[in-house]
Image (tube, rainbow, N blue to C red):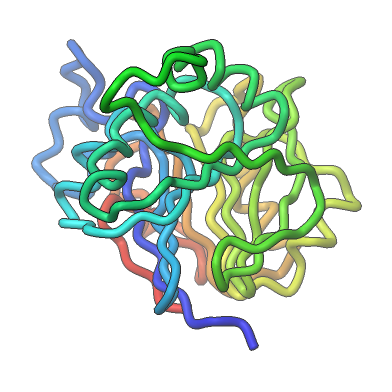
Length: 257
C-alpha cells in the first residue's frame, strides 16, 4: 500500500527567483507573498521518510522558513546550479539527526556534484563537511525509505532531466518536451506539478500554454504550475484565468495525497 504523502512547495521560481535582482517590473514589485518565489524545489514526507527534490541556492532559507527538523535524503532532477547549489547546507541535518544523508542522482548529475563539491568527495575528510551517501540511479523505479519513486525522462532542450512520480503525484521541472513512452508513466496521476516559465516560447522550458496543453492531454485532475518567471504575471491574476483544475503554484503550498 502506498503511504500517504505531504508535499510542500519550497520554491516555485525560475533560476533567478522572483523578485529578480535589480528588477522593478510589475511582478517583481508585487506586495503579494505568493509572488515571492524562491528557486524550485519540493519536500516530500510520509510518516517515516522525509526528502527534498533538489537543493536550490535557497535551500537553507527554505528549510528555516518551514522549520523542518528532519531530512533522510536528497533526490536530484538534473545538474543545473539552481537545483544543486544548496547541497552543502545538509550539514546541520547530519549533526542534529546524527545520520548520513542519502543523495540520489543520475550519472550526469553525479559528475557535476563531484566537480562542484569536490571537497565532499575528497580522500581527505575535512571535519564538518557534508556526510552524504551518493546513490546512482537510472530510469528504474526504486525506494527512498517507504516511498516508491518512478523516474520519468523529460527533455530540457538537449539535456535529459528526471521528473518523478510518487504514487498519484508527478513532479516535472525544467522540461520542454516529453516523449510519448514517458508520458505513459504520468498518466493516471491525480496531481501533477509542471514548469510553466512564461507565455513566450523558450528553448528549454514549457510555456504556460504548453503546460496547460500537457495537463489536458494527460487528463490530470489537478495540475499546479512551478518554475515561474517574472515574465508570466502576478499570481492572483494568472490563477484566476487558468482552466478548471489548473492552478498557479506558490511557495509554502501544501498538498496531501
